[in-house]
Amino acid sequence: MSHYANRFAVLVDACCLAGAIKRNMILSLAEAGYFRINWSERIMDETGRAICMITDKHANVEKQLNSMRVAFPEASVEGYETLEQTIAEGMKDKDDAHVVAAAVHCDASVIVTDNIKDFPLALLKQYNIGATTRT
Image (cartoon, rainbow, N blue to C red; front, top):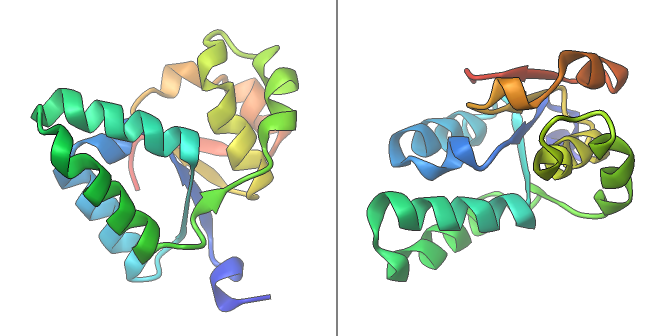
């Protein structure tokens, strides 16, 4: 098991990666080793769409996302899809089930999101996961 795998794990929602200032802060803290950052490709796709809406600069988005992937190669969570259906049953916004499923799959302790209301505390407690708007 690598040292990276032993660190406090967070799953970062797309809404927290879309804005440049917040994204840079989160990535800097992860790079400094304060936590193990995780995301799924679906979260990265949502991040790309959100960055395009914020900046209206489509050409640079893929370069930004690829830089994140290169800097944090262990961050990508795969294989969580089988959990989505079960988790979606306990959520108001079924579209966010993939975030919780990815968090469960990578053993994240916390989901970092700006949309706390979309992640029911009772559901998160079942998986021993918290949600916060701060890193």
